Length: 517
Image 1 (cartoon, one colour):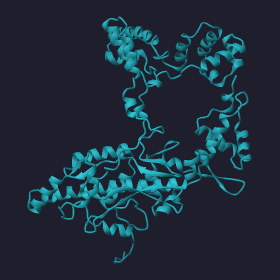
Image 2 (cartoon, one colour; image 1 turned 90 degrees about the horizontal axis):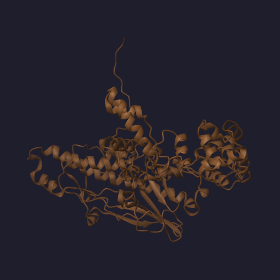
Image 3 (cartoon, helix red, strand yellow; image 1 turned 90 degrees about the vertical axis):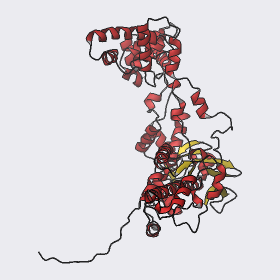
Image 4 (cartoon, helix red, strand yellow; image 1 turned 180 degrees about the horizontal axis):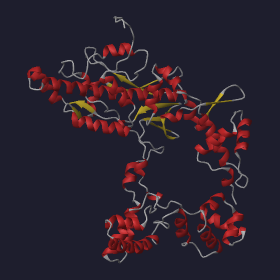
C-alpha cells in the first residue's frame, strides 16, 4: 500500500458552548426555564435575582410599540429594543444554529466559557427581565387571579375527609377509610383492589392481610355513601350504579341499573333492541334509561381537580389596541437576573492574582452569557409571535374560521431564521389571545385546496366541522360523507377520510353515537 499526504478543504459548523446553551434555552418551556434558572442560581455565585425594576434602565431593555407592517393603522406590535455597549467584548449568541450567518456568528464567539479576562462590570450586568408587570389574562379585567382560585379550591380528598369527621368509627376503621380516600385517583376511582392494598400494607403476612381487607371492605361501603355520588367505584359500571341508587325509584332507574350489569359496549353503541332483550324492558323504557345514564357523571372526582395543575401561563399576551393588536411579553415568566455587583467588584480588585482568580473569571463570564442568552430567547419568542400575529390577523379578529394556512418556513424566511429555530420557539410556548390561550404551534396548519384555486387552513376546516356538528339534527346526525359534501359546497375539497381524521382529533363521536334516542 502506497502512503501519501493530501490536503482537503471542507466547511463545518462548530457550536461554541455559548451557542449550545442559547439553543437549549430556546427550546425550554416556561417551567423548564424556571428550573434552569434556579439551578444556575445555586451553582453560580455571580448570578442573583433582583426585584428592583428600576435596574432595567441600566441594562437598556425597554418595551416599545412599533409597527410590523406598512399597515400601521391596523396593527400595532411590541418589540424589544436592546441597547448594547460597543466596547463590550462579549458578543450575543444567535439562536439560529443553521442560518446563513453562522460563519460570522461563530467568528464573534471564539471565546469560550473560560472568559476573556474582563472582570469589570459591564452595562449588561444589570437586571434583565424587570419589565412592566404582567397583564391579567381575563377578558373582563377582573381582580380574581387563577392561582388564588386554585389555592382556595377544595380537593376531593379534603372534601371526603371533612365528611369522614362526622362518622363515629373505631381507630382501625377510621385509618382504613383514610387510606382508601388517599388511594383514589383524580377521577374518584379506586384503581387498586382491596386485596392488593391490604397485602401491600401487611407485607405478606396472611393474617394481617385478611384483617386489613375486612376493614377496607367496611370502609369502602362508607365511602360509597359519601358525596359526590359514585366516588370510590372500581369501574365505570359501579360508578354509574352508585349514582343510580340515589335516583328516584322509577322504572327507568331500574332499567338503567340492569344496563349497568351488562357489558358497557352495548350502552356505548346504544343498541336499544339488544338491551331491551337482555334487560327485560321495553324499548321505550330502555331509551329513557339511556337518557338517565347520560345525565350521570362518569368521573365524579373531576370537579375537584386542582385547577392550578392545568393552569397555562402564557409567554406572550395579545390584546386589542385600537383597530389593531398589541403583542407583549408576559412579565411573570421573565426571570429578573443580574450579575452580583459585590462579588464582581471583589474579583475586579483582586484580579488574576487572587486565589482561584481564573476559575472565578470563568464563573463571571458564564453568568453574563446566561443573562444574554435568556434575553435572546425572549427576544426571539417576541419576534416570532409578532410575525404570527401579523400573518394570522384575521384569526385574532374573527376566530378559528378565519385561520389561514401557515408553515414554519414562511416565518423562518421572514425573520431570517432556520425552520428548526421556529420549531423550537413554537414548542411549549403559549400566547394569550382575545379568543383564549393557545400554543404557538396552533397557528400553523396545512392547506386544503379550494375550488377557486386558493387554500384553506386545516384549523379553519376543523372549526367548520365542529360548527356543522353543533348545529346538526340530533335525530339525524351528519355522517362523514355528508360533512365532506357540505365542505365541498363551501368550496373546500376535503375527502371523507380527512373529515374522519379531523372529527376524531376534535373528539367528536361518530354519527351513530351522536344520534339522540
